[in-house]
Length: 115
Image 1: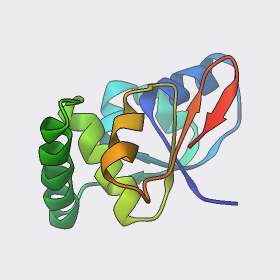
Image 2 (image 1 turned 60 degrees about the vertical axis):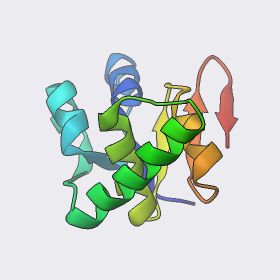
Image 3 (image 1 turned 30 degrees about the horizontal axis):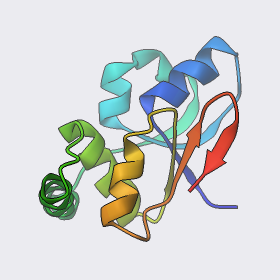
């Protein structure tokens, strides 16, 4: 099973449903939703390598006319560089998949969708 990096939307859902999740998240997700500190998660901080990849992703997204929030681009870069799959409810992460083929993301809605 792939290791997961939980995005804020998924952390909020888990918190509301009192789920027990393990894996990773980023400092950005903790800042957005501090209650996520109650989970058994490893908090990741961006490195210079992550910022370089984020800039590359941002440029590619702009070139295809699909920019997404900068924080989500950095979160994507953190996941890619650590070979983690992002678990989220935000569909705009699928645009990253269009420009970075080995990006792993699961978009959870009413039905689960893996890409």
